[in-house]
Image (cartoon, rainbow, N blue to C red; front, side, top):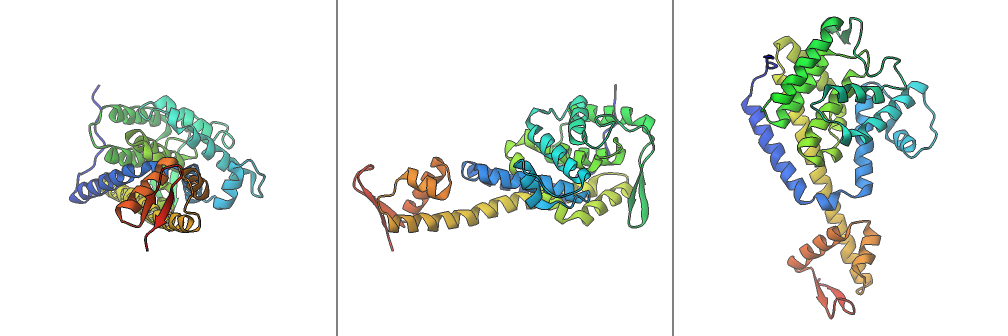
Length: 320
């Protein structure tokens, strides 16, 4: 069965951004062992959850989301707390979904909205419109067409040869256009884009794209609306690639700053205790053994430290 491809145009901006993102992802991959600490993974997970929920008006914020994640009780509306529960569960389960399987999307929606909707995990059975500042900005396709439209979208998803960065953005747009569920469409569109990227490059599990989209929320909605007017997803693809690039840059730059602090801290520890061990440095800085050894190797190359004596009985000398 032939299914028409979603309409979009490959622009010079899209090509440029794919190159920029790929380069940034390459840089992050080289330092991945240093940045994938449990603490940083948790921080970025919380940013992802908070970001995607705040776009939909959830007011709990990172502090309360953290508390809920840790099993603590927080003050908030039943609905908002239920939204956090659903988002935590579905993002924690992200590794088990196959982005090419429609049944996985339905199952994920069931988990995301299970505490909120009686028909979670099922396509809508009524007509919906999407409202903006100017009133209704998009009338979604009739509910009886949703199953066919979603089936076609997944057939395209299984067969397309486009770059995953483009595929994830197009799917996100087309999903929002169809608006297949009664509620939770924005969250699901963002989740599935992250899932597609995660299955392309696993490090995307720790890059909080949703947090950047939250910061650019009005531009996000504008890109959706303008793409709808244009009749193709090109403008939205460009917007999402910009957001992905910014999210990648944030991770890399944050690591650079963290590395500078770690370098300085190691030098201070070595001055105060020249006999400090790798294990001692790991404990003080909460970094992995490979992370500590990479920093030490860099400091040696930069001629900032040197080792005198044996590995066990020797000590560190910090070169002024």
